[in-house]
Length: 113
Length: 112
Image 1: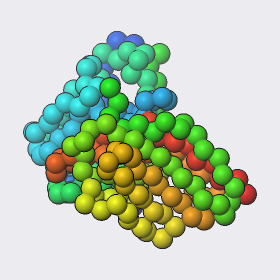
Image 2 (image 1 turned 90 degrees about the horizontal axis):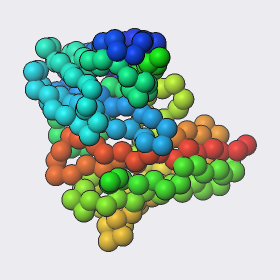
Image 3 (image 1 turned 135 degrees about the vertical axis):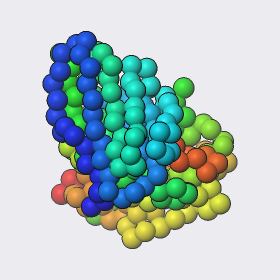
């Protein structure tokens, strides 16, 4: 397996609290991504990073922020969790250049109550 | 506006038969297409890809066909096996971008 791990695997949190999800890679890949998966929506890009301190928004970035201070770590923060952010969150990594595809982590199931 | 569409939420086939999963796209700038497979409680895994300069790519039991004029691609699995039961996502990218746009997925069930 590619060296990508997500933590925590499961989390229940209360509405209005901040939450941080972590993605850690040991592959030294340049690109890292955060997606959320919801029934009827498939996988939607939240934020992505193309290098240390270089990040950009995806299609569903409202209410989320990210940081990448090291190549290996990409953090996703829900600034004030809402029930609509209950989802399964996947981190992915890829090498630069076409054709590489993504390698996904195992996901974090987040429930906001 | 969804750029990558998988209009069949589910598909059921018998073991040994062919499975055909379909995907349509609206963005004519897409030039690279991929299929991912996802089992429950796991992340998606890369299955097969195709560049827009080709119309077919084959890898063992899996073949992807691309029809650029129709903006349509399909994944054929022959023969289908029970272990192929999973959700299959179609994805696309454009112009060297590393960003992928995913469809909603099709759940394939292969019955023994």
